[in-house]
Length: 159
Image 1 (cartoon, rainbow, N blue to C red):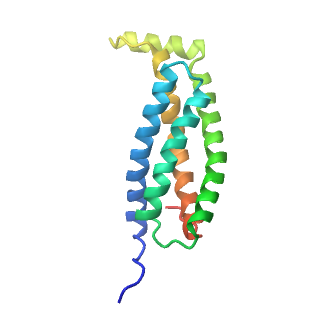
Image 2: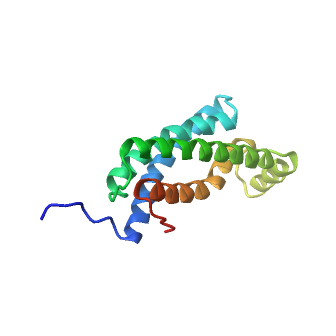
Image 3: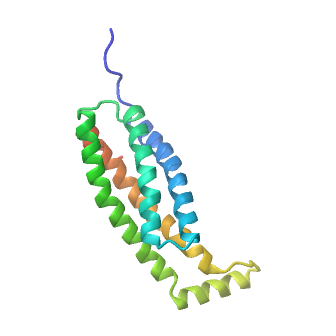
């Protein structure tokens, strides 16, 4: 009998979402770091990278993970765009805030001394942007997973 495919089991769903989000994050992380290295403010660099990535995650997530769609595509897109405007602005502010903390002279000096002590020829100022992005990422991925379940399937998926 033809019908809708069953949605994946919760653990499969989380792992599939993590894989798709991971690919999106690599795209986001690459764009973010290229823009940050080019001198674009971190807030704006995160905004651009995240916007590209969440578009990919939405399309792939709706087709592959959240198959029990209870929301029409135009409404799902509108809700997802609305959610991501708020989420990306909040994440961009968080990345910029963490970067400010990591870029403080006290943290940079200690980090440079630690790298030097173990023989790594690194300058910690070049790690500020990627470290800030990595610190915020687990929170953004989790909240995006919960939001997609609520938007597309109108269900709360916490894991």
